[in-house]
Length: 191
Image (cartoon, rainbow, N blue to C red; front, top):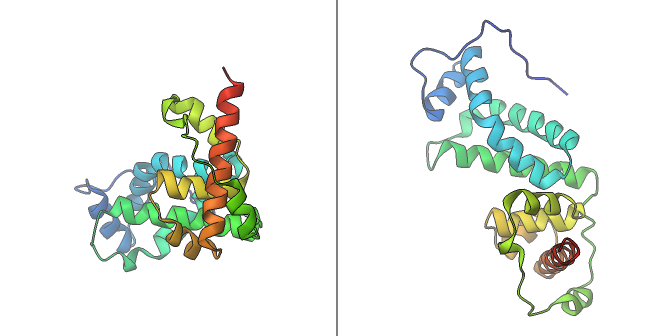
């Protein structure tokens, strides 16, 4: 793996204030712009990585991989939509690829099992504080955590999740329901 490093004297390039401007400067090979873009995006993208990976060490690996991908694919950004949204998609995809490589998703659920897990019970997750909720989400198994993040946080549909993860929509629904049930159990246990 390549580590992204800069020397202390490399500062933000003059006149590059927006992410789009920084991306354009990075595309021209400016190391100072790469550093500035990394510093601007890394806190938000680390939060994305942590949500998917569940632990800091793996999240840092995914963050590094994501930035390597971002810097090598800058020329594919067409300016449609926000640069940050485009970058977020890279980090989500990098996290998903990492989870696939480690087979953490275990996407072989049976459709009947998915049906048996379906319940109409409302989730109390919305009542939780942010830090408590993030701690509980991080404690979910990788497959349930991934689908929960994609559906609830990122706004993917079950069809999109199924396409991204190479599973069925029923499996996606099953994993989401498992995540919700497990979160409810954790919430009840923390009272």
